[in-house]
Length: 97
Image 1 (spheres, rainbow, N blue to C red):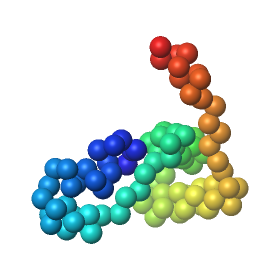
Image 2: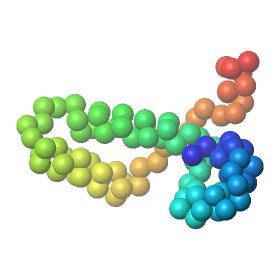
Image 3: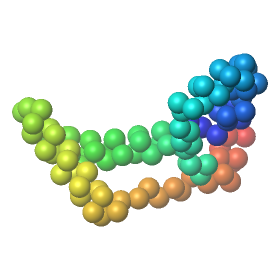
Image 4: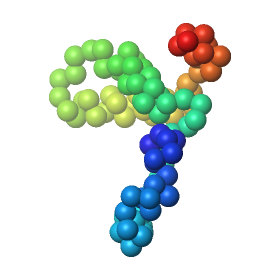
């Protein structure tokens, strides 16, 4: 989830009775996206790489698809592929203002 203030534990207590807020929070585990970049952008970049490096071909069946994706994933992990963020806050200010 994003780092918006409504996505914090205290927001449950602001909008629900304390017992209900506590009950719901006991079932949740919060995972916040990095502040330096959107997790959705990272997912989109990985899907793009998967398409370019693996899925831009005809794949005859689900078993072959699974094997191809597993091999691609193994290679990405072994290479310790990383995303090189080049869009900075300064760039955003220039483009978005």
